[in-house]
Amino acid sequence: MKLAYGWVIVGAGALMGCVAIGALFSLAVFLQPMSDATGWSRTGISTAMTLDFLTMGVAAFGWGVLTDRFGPRIVVLSGAVLLGLGLVLASRATSLLEFQLVYGVLVGVAAGAVFAPMMVTVTGWFEKHRGLAVSIVSAGMGVAPMTISPFAQWLISSYDWRTAQLVIGIAAWVLLVPAALLVRRPPAATAAAPGVPAEGGEDMTVSQALRSPQFIVLGLTFFCCCAAHSGPIFHTVSYALACGLPAMTAVTIYSVEGLAGLGGRIVFGLLGDRFGARRVVVVGLMLQALGAGGYYFTRDVGEFYTVAILFGLAYGGVMPLYAVIAREYFPMRIMGTVFGGATMISSLGMALGPAAGGWIFDTFGGYGYLYIGSFGIGLAAVAIALAFPSRRAASSGAPQPA
Image (cartoon, rainbow, N blue to C red; front, side, top):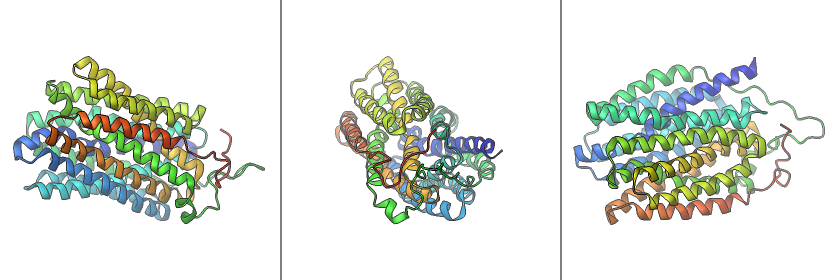
């Protein structure tokens, strides 16, 4: 019964991830209409997304600590309430600064209460199919470009950007609050078999975990991974428009990228269970770097779709596996704090792309240097990921058999 309810947790997490992350990333669709309607610069609007990632990361660490102490339900419920509030208030913003503070801080804090706590919670509900379960939750985020973004584009086309954001905020309340009430703490960890060290080094303290080589490599890999893909993701629609493609085609490319990310999450999750998460992450990071660099050469619709599939498959596939890797190295009782810390580091990488892309466009009149830089950072992520210590070499001990 406990394991069966784990799949309910997975479903709730997938829905919350879809709505929360979809609402956050939908700003990419709002970028041009907001700039045209208000006169705010793309750099200024993109800065709100940069603030989102920064506050999401810092908040994720705090939410992670609270998850370890009070359980995930109150954390994700708080995030659901704050997300809707942030979107509703942002839709009424009368100045760029007001929008940046409301959308960039409140929405970011809310998203931090959903991503890391839910990923951590799911890792505690599963052992044998952990990679698949975490990937399904993450797949909810992959569905976001195919649901929230087209919905936002339709609302903007039919009404205006303010109405669109208001409606999405209300929808967030309606969908997320009931889902949050389904979330429960994971069952107590099963004791290790005789002669097999406990998974995650059960005696490890928070201080030891945050200073360990495995956490340092995890954090740096996560940072470079996010720095490599955040800019290309956020500016996909604007780049396609700059290349002369129609608005709906540009959004469709963004949705195809998300669809590929959805497939990547499931495929990489299964491969992670079969071959090990660390090996699969290295391969995925290499594909991500190639996809980011490939955008530099795209001009027509066919090329955009091809690169979007490769890039989406790669970045979507690797993202959920960081939680799996963390669970292999660290005990469940401190996973909220540890993965929250890793998420905080990754958010710094996520914050680079949107602002850098906006600055590059405003300065050079195009996005070329964004994709060149993303390719280089993607290769750095590959190099760092190769330094992951084996679980037997790490102080956390060996894994349990699947």
